[in-house]
Length: 324
Image (cartoon, rainbow, N blue to C red; front, top):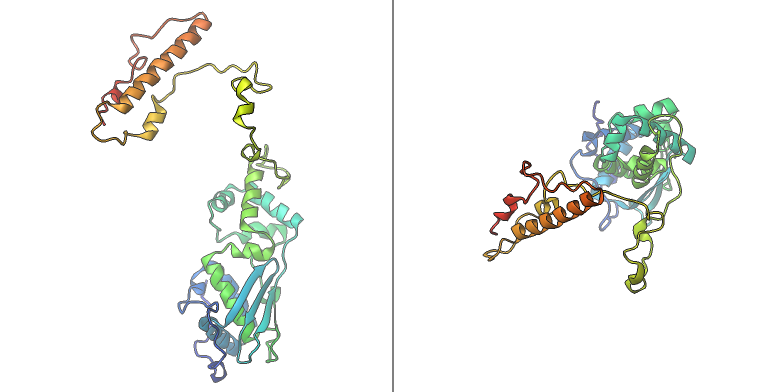
């Protein structure tokens, strides 16, 4: 894709705007034009604004003449300071998608693994609009007519309503898109976290690989958010199984990997210790495990004891050699 080429030398009338302390500015480098998301936005300015307004707006954006800029669903709102004492109010509007449209989009995302994997990992694919197109939607504005700039200044504007102040604000949006392409979702009416949450929810639903399913369901209170009773009130029945678990029986089994907790913890941090702490713990774990397994076998009438031919059916000597 050919990079947008903005005029680099502004007219004389742009040289002396009222300076803004701590204004929002873009870097002198062409960060936006080097990003695919930034380029998509720059094209709208390049085809909608005059050459002079592009040059002046670029100078304003680099000087930091934007006092505030807010991105919200369907609108960019900014205050851009010119030569007059009062800053101009700038807005750039575009259509935001309603909830049913986002439901269709996220359903489509959930059914296409190549998009789901990248989106859930935080990456926005460069071909994302290919997912929106069959639904009659476009994530990025398709033409310059899809965005509507306005400004309270009285300077002449282009046929599509662009002036140097709106160009300035739009260039800051392009720079933000270069840093975070997900900004376009906020403009279209959904926050990144909401989209990811709904996509994860849909992927977990049975049969989510195809067909229709609700994208979002009401929040269900998590176990960790439920207030626990004080321990003093639970002492009499602390070890009793919860309702519905009275008949649950889980037969103890030997783990596939010996001493997984000790392996995760690693060597003991005590230097020069007299006793091999990890090895002693490993021995304790083995003794307790053997006792539990023996009791379980006895309960089932099949207590054959440890298999002397199985080298792993005894103590794990590897941990016992630890002298740390």
